[in-house]
Image 1 (tube, helix red, strand yellow):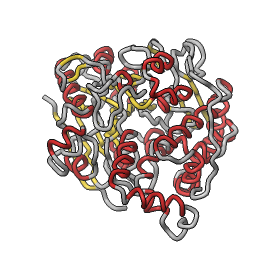
Image 2 (cartoon, rainbow, N blue to C red):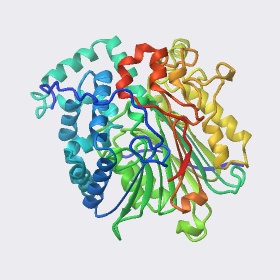
Image 3 (spheres, rainbow, N blue to C red):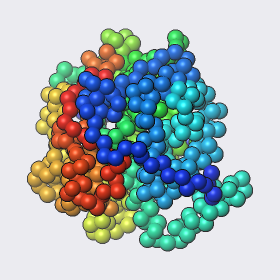
Image 4 (spheres, one colour):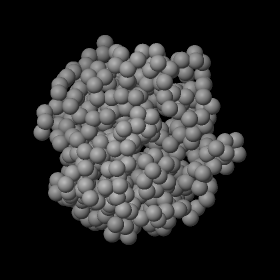
Length: 528
């Protein structure tokens, strides 16, 4: 029997107008990585391994230097891709977003998180970057949430003159329902990113311990940079070591998947359509402090909620192995889900159960009050705005959210009592479409293949054959968590290869993306 302890609560309140039109063009054309992938070096199956230790600044310098030593053009290329994405998604170039980072994030991070800021300064020094560039890397996931509420922060006496052109444009878009809806669809696409399963207990897992599996999906533009296995060893007395999937220049996981020296594994899935925001502490700093200083699951939940911005709103899941190696005196393993909205938060824990992540929430308040625009067009027409679960896709199997929820519930029940890392790999590679009633790798399935979808699996504002999909898998169990490690696979979970050249031959409508994309060849598994 699955026994869950649930805490259901409301949280307590607690450059711009004139900017350069310089384009960061890639010096590369279509990328074809060898088995090292992404500058990772031979034998790493697409992953770039970075280990840093010591003081915050020293760690940062080492981080920056290691990236540059492996691929001197990595950051230049990454920023050229970001510039392309920003222009496609927002109509504004990367210089504009550097300005936002300097005006709105630099001061918060420097004042509230001085050690993290020092690490960022070190990365900048080691890689010959500006600090605002490192900040942009780390608030990249927060920007769609901030931008949706941008006018509140720039139409003020302090910034009104500087951002005059932007204010003009944003009010014009806000007055045009069609333009506003198109903008919302583009921003919401960045909030629908991954699938996650975490299980524990004798009724669910093969050995009664924790088993966790996570697959990220996104457009293949920014996805290609999430191939860093980052191991951080702070100086003595400054928290616990950690290993995570990350991005060059990252101070946190971003995707997210990590294991810490406190015997804790953590991951998340974003909450699609989330639209509540308050500019406070960015998620990159809040979750990094959880990882480095959190010793219990309750500390994680508390730190995440402190000065929460609602940026990168997620269903977070954490597991503590307890007992031997976990530092908690023989207590049984336990897992926690924190459905983290802005004004509403749902916290659940169990020693014998399973938690699922599918880009929506089980908490009715979050998905019906703080979310919008995440359901398929067909279902929107059928139910109308404001209907029960009308904005979440929670029960709509014609949506990616609804199909993945239903399929993961079926599969975890099918494998009840037998779940281990091999089973978790199979679950995350699943291609069953409950709406079509057949196996069909498309944009609805757990192993997401938007790039192969000509329309039968398209949901919401999905565009046929867009280069988007699942691009990795990470799994961990109690044994690997105690070793502060996990297994990782770079590329689609099912092992299917993605070739930029072949995709462009078949779908030339995406040819302007070609120079900004990378191949995902078939690869093996590595231990982080």
